[in-house]
Length: 189
Image 1: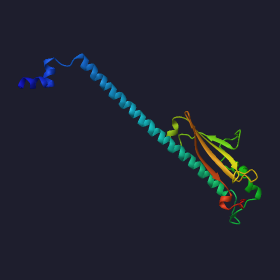
Image 2 (image 1 turned 180 degrees about the vertical axis):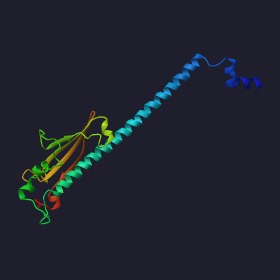
Image 3 (image 1 turned 90 degrees about the vertical axis):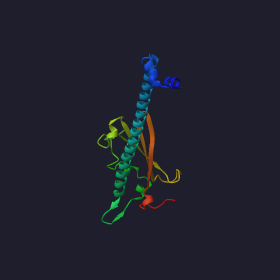
């Protein structure tokens, strides 16, 4: 019984055979390399996921800041301080695209080919995540009628934001601006 027990003990078996063999060393080194490789691979996937989430959050914040600047200027655009009310002419109510394009915060490029489309690249001063791949944010102004009927005015402004980085070209968000929604103009419907 004692002899069988001694043969089963690995340590004594290793001592009797004068250590590990070449095959055992190769197998253990291969397993070690495999474990290290998978560890590095999964750590890099995790870091890539963290970078993507930080980039998404920073792009969203950049677009939110731009929307807030536009809304702030849009609210102050037609305010008459002496009368303490908003005053617009009928022509401005029907198509106010020129007023939006002439806003200070709308003009990013000095001389764009199309003033309805503006693009910018946020820098690292906005967020450190922008120091990596270059990100291009594009906003486009489209004027629409309230119920997609050509005979009505184009009194609704749709501002669409697209984001490009790497091979991605994603429509991020769209907002609608309308003076009728704030009772600045009479409703046409």
